[in-house]
Length: 282
Image (cartoon, rainbow, N blue to C red; front, side):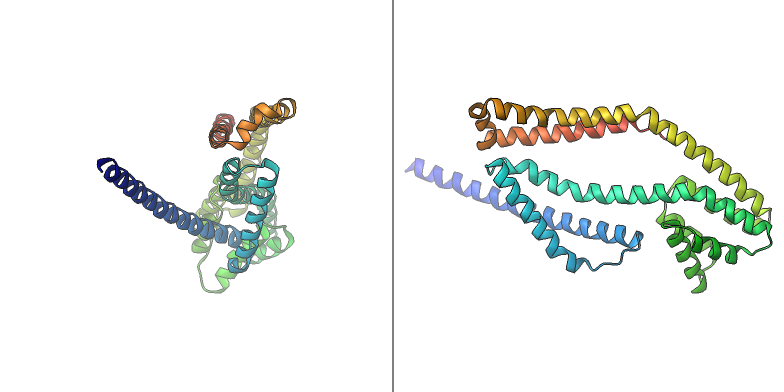
């Protein structure tokens, strides 16, 4: 009798813990979806891609289900899907950060030539707003899109300082901040704006040069992170071909799936750590 009561109490405790865990998991999943939706919308709006995410969500769910089915067919085990699920959850935020970083790098690379052209137009006697409009129309995205938005905000009644601050909010880089500060100071103090822009252009060009040298010198570290991350995957494939019976325990048991999950987490942590070591701010 006592054993039965104890078993019922243990079952109730397990059920309560499972219910709390499921509720917490549902809350985390809703928070993840909301953050991913906001991050995706912000990234798309920043890239001037105006899409309705409610229409994209079904395609995303079908892609997720397809990846899980393909992974289940390849790995031939439910527990082996845990690393794939972790990758699927972590991949969208990483892709969004990569898209934003790439767009900011393209914008910074276009700034020196843009400032030289703007300084030349000012020396020729053009006003700041007509010069911005002409040069922005002749430039390539993302610079043309960002300055077109600045000019559009000015036409709607927003002042130049506020429009430039909005530009810096959309492009929070050191190069954009330096350009915005130079334009604001020169417009408020009435100094030689063309000379200031040329000086800023030389500074930005020199900074891009040193950034390129730093990337070249740290390329070995980044390559090592990719090689070290690919070695375990290659070793698993080789061992699966040489000893399929021994490796079957890794692919078709719950503790084998747990080991694979730990390997994926450690691999990601190692890649992040090596890349942070190899990243040098200039």
